[in-house]
Length: 244
Image 1 (cartoon, helix red, strand yellow):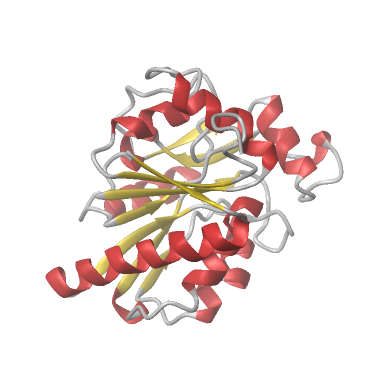
Image 2 (image 1 turned 30 degrees about the vertical axis):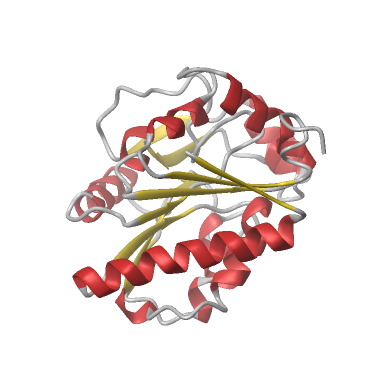
C-alpha cells in the first residue's frame, strides 16, 4: 500500500490522474490495449476531470462501470451512468464503455457484464471509499467470499444518506434500496487499485480503513490486501490519521 497525502482535492485529482494514465499507457504499450474500472460520486470529480487532460490513447481503453441503482432511469440526475457519460465518457473516444444497465433484464445484464469483465484482467481500478467504508455498493457487512463478478445488493441507511448529503436526492425515501454492484472479489482482480478519497466527510472511513485489520464491517480494508493499492488523500480526509 502506498499512501499519498495532498493539500486539497484538486491536487489529489491531478496526482491520481497522472498515476492512472501512467498505468494505462504501460498496459497499452505492453498489450496494445487497456481496461479500467471507474467509480462515481462527488469524491471522483477532480480525478475524472484531470484524467480528461491526460495523454492517453482512449481508443484503446475499455471502461467498466462499478455499480448502479435498480429502478433509477439513466435520465435521473443521480444515475451513475448519467454521471459518467456527462463527466467522462462523452469527452473521450473510448474503445468501449460497459455501463450497468438496470432498465432491462437485471439477470441478463449481470451475465453480460460478468462475461466481459472476466474475459481479461482490468489494468486499473479507480475505486472510491464511502462514508461507511463501502467499496462500490458493498455496504458493511460486505461479502468477501462471493466469487461472482456483479451481484444485487441492498443498500444500508448510511450509504443512502450519503447520497442525500451529496445532493443527488432530496430525501432518503427517494434513494433506491437495491443496486447492482461489482463484488469485492472482482474489484481485487484489478492489476492496480487507485482510491481517490478527498474531503473531511471521508476522514472517519479512511481512519477505519487504515487502523483495522481485514473486516467485512469496514469493506475497504480488503483493499489493503492488494499488492498494488494506491490511496490518495487530501489534508481533510487524512485528518483522522495524521495531525495536519
